[in-house]
Image (cartoon, rainbow, N blue to C red; front, side, top):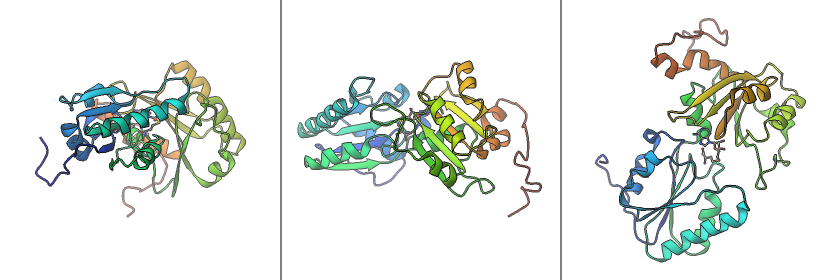
Amino acid sequence: MLPQNDWPRFEPGWVWLVGAGPGDPGLLTLHALNALRQADVVVYDALVSEDILAWAPGAELVYAGKRGGKPSAVQRDISLRLVELARAGKRVLRLKGGDPFVFGRGGEEGQTLVQHGIPIRIVPGISAGIGGLAYAGIPVTHRDVNQSVTFVTGHDQSGEAPSSLDWAAISRGSQVIVIYMGMKHIARIAGALLEAGRSVDEPVAVVTEATTERQRVLETTLGRLEADIAESGMEPPAILCVGRSVLMRQVLDWQAMARGESVRAFDPLGRGDAAQSA
Ligand code: SAH
């Protein structure tokens, strides 16, 4: 199943914190597959697809999704559950959507495990803010657009719009802003960016259920964002990308091309002989 290699052995009593990628099982790493093959228990989140769980046919599956309620209390329960399972001598695979260390509380869980003397291994995954946008044909960096990219979360631990974020600084410092968990507070986020000086015409993409068969992409602008999302009926999980790299989708929407649709623009940023310049 796995190519020849000296793959790590999953020892009993260990917890591996593993990223499952944004959805498409093809975006799992080989280390993740190696882990799924050996795990006794898979403790998984809401965003991990069933297709991926099917790769661990021998493991007990434990759902640890968090919905509403008191997130911090539940988070503590999950971490302690992992400790218990490891102490019971299981090979415990903690499977998280995307990358475990990107807005995924992997750091907190890892810390609790280490504090309880449980040995851990971290397996990074493809984060939705990079891989999900790539499936929509949007490069998070593009030489003509941005030298930096900022990943932000649209709400904090309490579920509120993150009050600690300095949108003016983010707006000044980053031509491209990738927003996780942004749907709930979309009006406030768009308002804050406009107030910080971004233009109403600034391109924005919304990608829901990225990399799955249900992936949807909305191309809009900051000024129309809220109304267009409402009209589209799009629901989370969604990644938002604010910035001119969204325009590159006109030439890089590889899924549309694979369906036989024609390229919308070969040079959407108007760089002239971009193909020739080294
Ligand atoms: N650790 C994850 C992020 C967890 S936070 C990662 O690295 O991707 C959960 C948020 O991630 C969602 O609210 C959404 O903003 C984003 N997300 C995760 N998977 C997604 C997907 N397939 N499509 C769109 N957004 C996704």
